[in-house]
Length: 137
Image 1 (cartoon, rainbow, N blue to C red):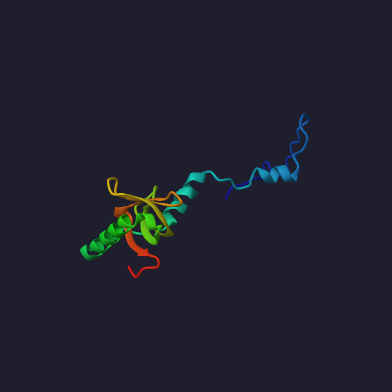
Image 2: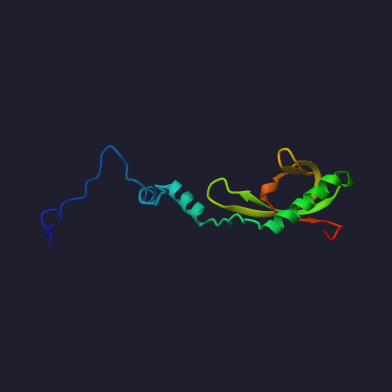
């Protein structure tokens, strides 16, 4: 055990040039601070869940292809569709599935995508389901 007898009774030093620090300012010296704010961002990102991309079977691909063919032949009818498609995550592996209900404005078979009326572009390879409204197709 350390013996402080030699200093225990010494007077407390008070500066002649500076005034005493307020309790509020003294407490602020010991307040916690975020030394690694990026660390918390990385942890939050790691917590965030993503979905895996679903590989479609051949029958589903044929069905989707037939629906896209029907849409391309009837593009002038302002067909309202419900399209479920995959959106790749920009920061980590996987992504999320989104269902858009909208009217198809353009179908581009060269670039293999379609454009909805709200200017959303969806690539054929990311589509997992198409439902054409007002049709049993």
